[in-house]
Every structure is written in structure tokens, then in C-alpha cells.
Image (cartoon, rainbow, N blue to C red; front, side):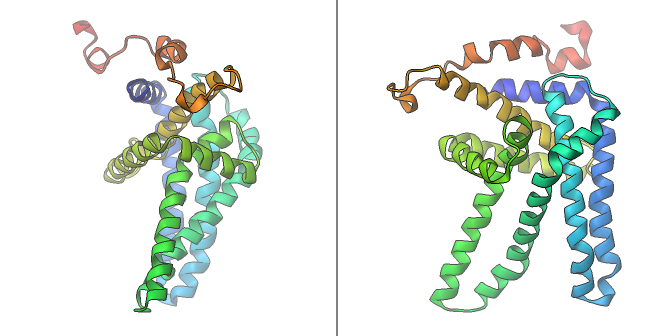
Length: 261
């Protein structure tokens, strides 16, 4: 699965490079507006910065939700038009707004909660510091599934969070792999000012991973209920055959030097 994930995510991104560039620019504008706006009022104090940063983070989340819908179409290799923007917005704004609130709470936890508990210098403070750390780690792990699952399966926030938690529990190895790889892609994006792979690249990476992972659960649904599903060996080659055929036998060498293939 991992090999196909790498190939599919890369080639889907490459085949939509112009669109990805445009969407990354839009995401950059939203991020820079949030950060730049907060920085521009920093001389008025922390309160002014927070007042600007709050709507800025929510704006980034709302923009990200719409871009996530584009990445879902990209992962399915489907065409779309600008006329679909309204539908993308209606389908994503509630869950994206909730994610924006979670992002603000996480930011408050990192900048206010952790320093506060660390300064208590007591067992009580150490315990709360540790609890908050693990809550933040869990949130960072779950958020990888949040937007992809929202686009592909679940529109309701409560059920969406529950299903993200179930995916994490059932696939801890993949979750950690996605976390490390997404962090690496994010680091590369910072070096390229968010243009490559950028917001689109990271979202498409997680989108593709969830798309391929869900074939596992479609297969498990076909098994008898009395069969121990956790012990079943997943026939990934069979399940992902169609997706693999869509990607084809393309290679990086063939993409840059087609005459050598």
C-alpha cells in the first residue's frame, strides 16, 4: 500500500501541477493574511494580536476545507469546474470551522497551557502538563484523517471524530507514518514558501492514504460477521489492483526522461 500511495499521490499532484500551484497560492494568501495581520498589530499588545489571529485561523481553516474538496477530486482523477466551488463550500464550512476552533484551542494549549503548567513546579502541574501534551499529540495524529474522511465519508462532526479515532486505533503504524511524512512534506513546503508541495500536497497525501486504506474496510465488510476480522490478512495487491492500473507503470525517470523508458 505504501508504495502505491507514494506513486499515486505524486503523479496525481504532478498531473494537476498548475491547479495545485494556484490553490497553494490561495492558501498562502490566507496564511500570510492571518500571520501578517497579527504581526502588524503586535505593537498594540497581545490582545490585539489575538483579536486578529482568531478570525485569521478560522479563515485558513475554511479555505483549507474547500481546497481539501479539490484534492478529493484530484485523488479520484475527476475533472471539475469553478462552478463547483459553491458546492465545495457548502459541504465543508461547518467541519472546517470546527477544525479551526480545534486549531485555536491547540495554539492556546501550546502557548498558554504548557508554560502555565510547567511553571507550577508541583506534581499537580507535571500531571496536567503531561495530560495536555498527550492530548495535543492525539489531536495532531487524528487530524490527518479529519478532512479526508470528511470528504469521502462523514459530514457530521461528532461521527467524523469517532471514525478518525477508530482509524487511529486500528492503524497505529500507518498513522505514525503519515504523521512523520506529513511533517516532512510540511518542512519542504516551508522552504518553498508553501508552493511545493504546499497545502495541496499535504492534503492530497493524506487524502490518497485514506482512499487506499478504506479498501481494507470495504473488504472486511464482505466477510462473515463470525469471522475474526482483526486476524484476517488483507489482500492489498488484489484490493488495490484497479488503483494501481490507473497509475500505470509510470516512473520518475520516465517522467523526466521519457526516451529512456
